[in-house]
Image 1 (cartoon, rainbow, N blue to C red):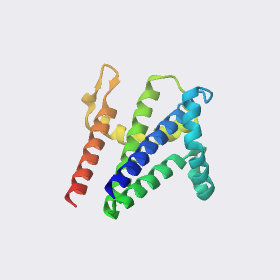
Image 2: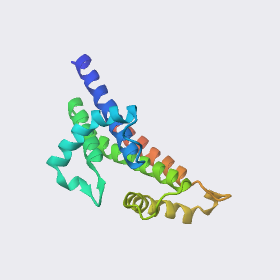
Image 3: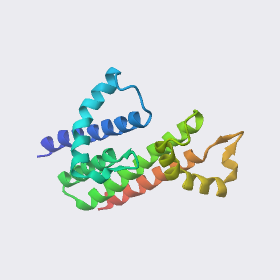
Image 4: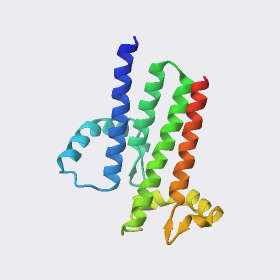
Length: 173
């Protein structure tokens, strides 16, 4: 049974990473006519369209949350296939944390380039990432060195530690 389950779980994890790449490319508004982007869109768009049809609430303020819903669903499916619902919920929390880490990275990249601050996607990213980054900057002001803000790195390390703790809890069960 394990020799059948492992390839299925591997395919699910690879597809989750393809979804993440697709979402990042979408947020960065990469030219969709590039061959690699076309392939990724062909692989992910049918699943995104299915999620948008079944869950119309996934598009909020011009931001498409169908990749996040799909990642959570695939993580849940992966954990159910392994037979542990508790692990499924920990996996979903881990996926949400990893998605937030990606948002922090995008926010850090956007802070280095000139973007329209009134772009709705940029505003959503800033609303989601600025509060914890501002908290870290207030509590640890020495993290801004020569105009370079290291608070995203500290937040990412903290979130990675949280994921590690969740994985340890999962291993205990």
